Length: 275
Image: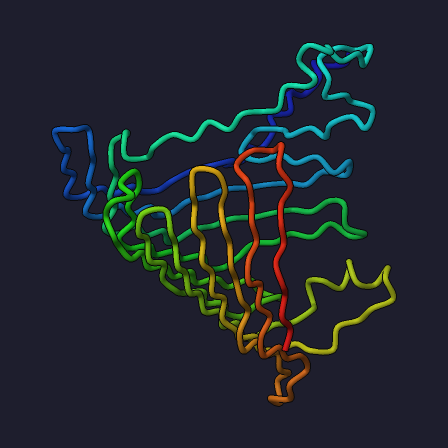
């Protein structure tokens, strides 16, 4: 007679892994504060898949899409309690100085392998950056009284889309205010990997070695009742492989964006200047 059915063992897949985590010069304070001289993460592996239905699967977790007919009301009938409907939400603002402080003098990430498979594309696409390096220095949390500057640099390579991307800059923290400056430089910009997305729109990329550069400046001031934001894009250019400027922006300036801490108040947008 027929023998037993063969047992098929599914191939094991690494969903998430970290090769090495290195912490140096840890110092704890009497008030619960913590200072770390250096922290580095090496050899991170992470796989993510966007399934045909649009849901996301990351590191063994399946993030299901919410049903379109879902209701955020706890009452299935949709009834609203008149005693609570007129009560505006109250923002609770805590004083960061009440909690312990945290300082990280240097944080680096390297040798990272991240893959993202998009199965919603006309033909499934696999995105896998060949390089992701991050460096952050002098990160301070929980101590608004200390004036400090945090510096950041991100290096990224994504074959078929970006040959090299460098994002670097600094942010000055003082009290509840933050002033940040970021510079972006990207080379080897192409559209090969975007072809499956562009084709249904009747579009085809013609640049395979484009260059993008520009600056971002931001000021943020957080108060007890509202947060004020000002930002500007400066000297942005996009050029082809021959150096011809295809797109340029000298200045886009947002003078003021007022964001109240309470959802009972509206967001106010100030003048926007484009040059």
